[in-house]
Length: 406
Image (cartoon, rainbow, N blue to C red; front, top):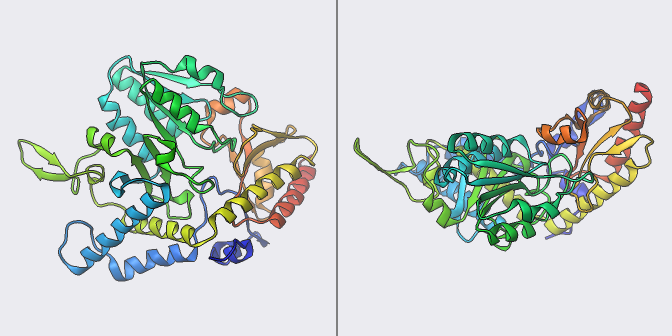
């Protein structure tokens, strides 16, 4: 394996050669969705040209081939996140679908008065499903506050946790603040009172090494499109015993063992949670994305990205009037900011005209925006295929945009 070389890696991502408004594309919106390497794109094409059939149901060659590739992808995911068995990997539509699955299925095992603890920096997809569950089952939702620097107020954690806490559901890395939460410590404290823990890894799976056994989380969810795979595919990891104990989220084909009009018995996990025809090509392409990651110098890639994140924050501090929204001691390569009284959408539009893709708005974290008393931010989020030169060009474009708006 060759040492990480960003210029070589960039050759694997064809979209990085695109131009936008006559300018070379600088893609700083990786928190929303990452770009795809050629081998992932080609794997989707190969599947539809040579392997397409439904999985698990046919005895013919194409069905057997598609099933093998689909289940090999499950094995690739399990290996990448350190799961003890592929049976703990459920394919979903994405992070949102995974959280809803847990909120419904695990939620059915809870009783009125049980408590759910989330944090003040959660994405809407880790708030609304729990609110729906509370309304449905008579549960209580509690929130661990966020401090001004964008870290969790861990001093309040022990007070919020109790024997009534059924599950703690929190983001591993904030999609808005870039904060890396001390999840190992939180998991240990939650388990001490008998609570389960769900980790939203949508913003960490592509930036940090993850081992679910070392973390000892009970559930972990992420989206494929954040980790160089297609949209519409994701993963729910859950400890095997929990999957066995939870009722299915949906009913239909492939999740059954035997159906009669009197009673239905369910397929073994994880198929119990994969009703209907799955996103076969998406799952196979997700497996290919992890194969791609395993083929490169991943520690070198993580180190390069960490360098980018530090350099971006350093350069941003040179610009008068810049305000970071959250400035935690440990962050991933995501930075939310405002400049004076300039509206983030205006800045985003002028950056786009210069070929630079950033995200503006509330980033599906409206309660967090309310806490900081702002309508939204500009968010620059990096990946390991970004470069120092792109950051320099971004700073120049941002200064130009500020001058125009002022």
